Amino acid sequence: MAITVVGSVAFDSIETPSGRKERCLGGAATYFSLAASFFTDVRVIAVVGEDFGRRQEAVFQARKIDTRGIEHTAGKSFFWEGSYLDNLNEAKTHITDLNVFAAFEPKIPEAYRDSEFLFLANIDPLLQRRVREAMPQAKLVAGDTMNYWIKDHRPALLEVLKGLDVLLINDTEARMLTGKSNLLQAARGVLALGPRTLVVKHGEYGATAFFSDRSFSVKGGSAQSYPFRAPALPLEEVVDPTGAGDSFAGGFFGYLASQPELTPAAFRRAMFYGSVMGSFAVERFGTERLQALSRQEIDDRFMVFRELTHLD
Amino acid sequence: MAITVVGSVAFDSIETPSGRKERCLGGAATYFSLAASFFTDVRVIAVVGEDFGRRQEAVFQARKIDTRGIEHTAGKSFFWEGSYLDNLNEAKTHITDLNVFAAFEPKIPEAYRDSEFLFLANIDPLLQRRVREAMPQAKLVAGDTMNYWIKDHRPALLEVLKGLDVLLINDTEARMLTGKSNLLQAARGVLALGPRTLVVKHGEYGATAFFSDRSFSVKGGSAQSYPFRAPALPLEEVVDPTGAGDSFAGGFFGYLASQPELTPAAFRRAMFYGSVMGSFAVERFGTERLQALSRQEIDDRFMVFRELTHLD
View 1 (tube, rainbow over the protein chains, first blue to last red):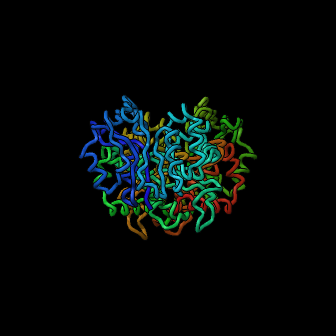
View 2: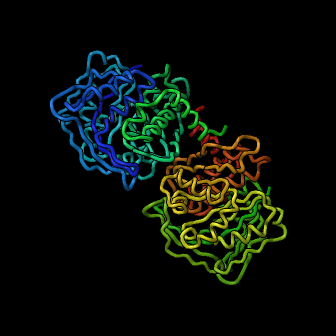
View 3: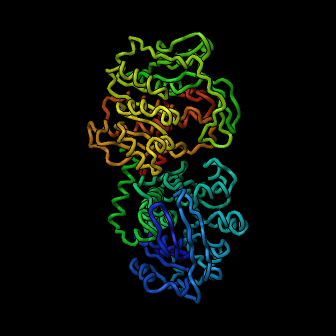
């Protein structure tokens, strides 16, 4: 089933211990849709400027991603510059130029309206909410957010959380959202805010899913009483961590959308596919690795993740 | 098969966000032997002072741990005082009084000499080496160490590492030992120093085993080419992290020693049992939880860990 994703399409200049790259094609919606495109049809809602040309468009086309919802407007695309020189787990932001994104008014093409899966990438919660309300047919809605919205736009964010089937955030964000440093307590606190399922991403240690008793993954099985943890792959070199979380979300949600039924087993495999896509994303700068990937490589790595965690 | 463990038996005064406890029975050899005693026979080599009396002895007796190798001498037992107020992952040491431990000369009872498993808990590498050489019949030798020995006693430590079948350390120690911040690079660097297998403990994120091509776990299966990761259990409250790593080592090595063959599958289960014992240890102060535990509870939690990580 098709996924519609709303979020940023951007240019990133990135410095890591492995080197520096100027103006990589990036943005949460880009990483998400590339990762999800290996599993299902993906439709993007975003805004770009005049610097987004044929070369960038071709990246989406190569993965058959529907870009009719990417609005082209006068000015420059969202630009971010950051580095990970001291700590690969946390970006240091040097420049954030919102540019055309500052006045972003998501417009949903008619052809997107039958999407049963909706992903609200990390943008202003007011926009997340507006898109959610404009797509009432979406039967499964997942989303992301970040420290900025948690700190300074809490009321709007809380409204979004109430309607989410799955919220995907990292440890720091879960703690910030609840004021609890213990992971399980923080998870309970987040679930109490509305999301039916919470996925906490731990960077190099993988990700954990926590389920409320209203969790969606009960069809064809009993409700999950325990969390579920997917590992990350120990990698020789993390070239560029940018987009790892969005790629996780794309693999996770893309796989879910490809499944005939949302069973607990499908959910678990989706967590593994999320980790798999995150592990590929960081192997090269920007979206380079996701662009060059094959489904066979993805499934091979899925088996490695199984090997990495399973007793037999 | 029986395990002999050499290490500290001590008193700990501990402060955590959950409270404060004075002079808990502690020490690496205590946590290790209590955890391992649920799986196999355990024999302890340590030294204690006059403050180690019948009550402390009874803790070992209740678990049928052989204490003939615990030497009683004039003076006070090893005493440690520390807190985890800011960070449950790292102890802040207030007091370390070596007391009788300062002149510790491990004496190995004749009855211990047929132990096929030997665990060298975190003590002076010179003593670790001496015990290892005095027990040439040990067919599987595992050990632990800490930042102090890595920094200031490196040559002696390197001698010990050469002879280890399994080294169990935490992330920080693996990085300190090799100067590599990337986990996989650090693991490769540690394996190059001699240990045939390396287990890196990640605290609340579990533990990862890395295998060299000389790794022991090849009987009955092919050599492990990928690492293996056991999760930790997300807990509502970590009452006292003291001894979690030693309890992990006890569960891990105790389970291995109980197995007829050292297969890759047995090794994987051992990693899970290690995580299980670590998760129990932190539920109460000192060794309280380990003392009150049953094998049934251990096996029930093993199944929870399976549930937490397995696709089906």
